[in-house]
Image 1 (spheres, rainbow, N blue to C red):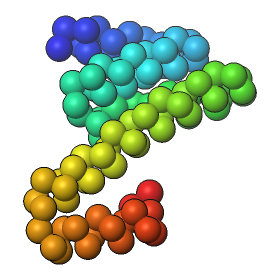
Image 2 (cartoon, rainbow, N blue to C red):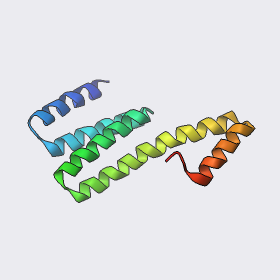
Image 3 (cartoon, helix red, strand yellow):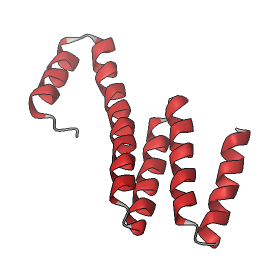
Length: 107
């Protein structure tokens, strides 16, 4: 919680003085913290903001690195949905899971 508070303060400073690389780092660190704590939607938000900030820098290597983080956040979010259907283990949820697997409509 304290790390999040300080990173958010740092993020505000980085925005105000236009430290774009530092802003990418802050967003990425916050995304990692939320990812580790299981708050995957919040992690994905921060990873997306990191990508937008990296895109503004036109740094292709950095953008590719952040894409990996975005993918990790999205994968974790999707796994929550899959696990919900697996844990329910009834015919309707099994059909939903198999339909999703076949069509990948939730991506």
